Length: 220
Image 1: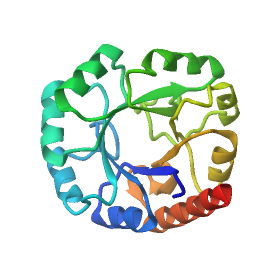
Image 2: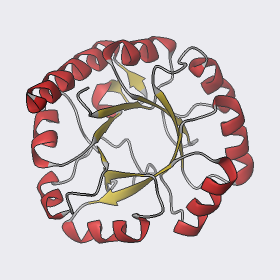
Image 3: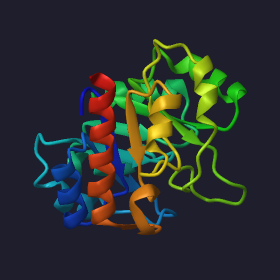
């Protein structure tokens, strides 16, 4: 999409995967976290990912997963990226990169400009950065809560830093997300759902169509 990556995350049905691929999504995310309504098992993800091939990058989303679980996930779906959404340390990420030889995307919870400072130690460690909104009080989920943060604070971020933007993005605000950020990619999950974990294929198609239009206009 004119150089813009778009990830549809929390996929759990063949129909939603087809809609994402047909719409031009560059990344497809499978969530391996039992507390999430979008959770899938490695076996289920393997069946879902079987027909993806080289059409999109498969992203395995985990939250403080141990090596045994990561071994199972990697063996099942051979992901193109490991997305870490927990409290992993830079040392942990280095170890995982060395073990699996797979790029790592580290997620950060953002609410205010001071939260952006936590990115610095990771700039030469993680292969990709994901800036997500801090979860609301009481939430068991580090992401997929359908809330956004004030994207205007990203203007203070070094323009050379490449990141994906996540958190509450949908068809109604994606234009603002692109205008207010320097994001090289967008990550959407709840923004294309009718209920937590229930993807709406029509919304996936319409969202990707809108993003393609905006990206092409920006490139023109």
